[in-house]
Every structure is written in structure tokens, then in C-alpha cells.
Image (tube, rainbow, N blue to C red; front, side, top):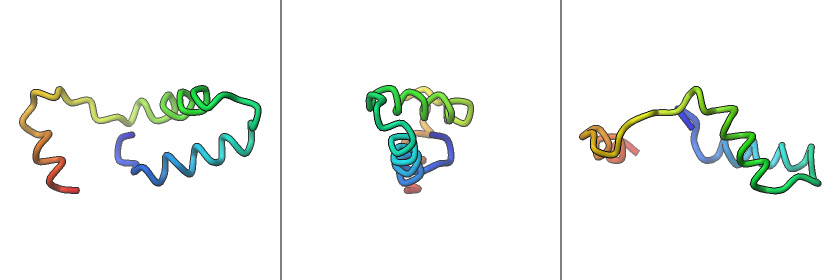
Amino acid sequence: MGARDMGHFLEALDQYCSELPGELLITAISSITMTVFPERHNLSPHVERWPKMLDER
């Protein structure tokens, strides 16, 4: 989700579901994921930055 947090994702999910109540949940999640895909943090799990990123939370 890039720099966005879970709260942002849940708000986007709520908005999507409100606007398109007949859609499947997986369709909503997929749509939101594709929207934020370019902003993702693409790090290998083997990179030592993972523990540091998790400690910063």
C-alpha cells in the first residue's frame, strides 16, 4: 500500500462497497490494490531493511 496505512485501505474499501454494493468483496479489494500498486514498497523479504521497517512502526 506504499505510504498508506490500513485505515486508508479500509476507508477506500468502505467507499467502494458503498458505491457498488452488488460487487464481490474480492473485486473491491482487487480494484483498490491495483490503484495503489504503483506506490508499493517492493522489497525482497531477504533484504535486511525489513526488520528496521517493522521496528519503525
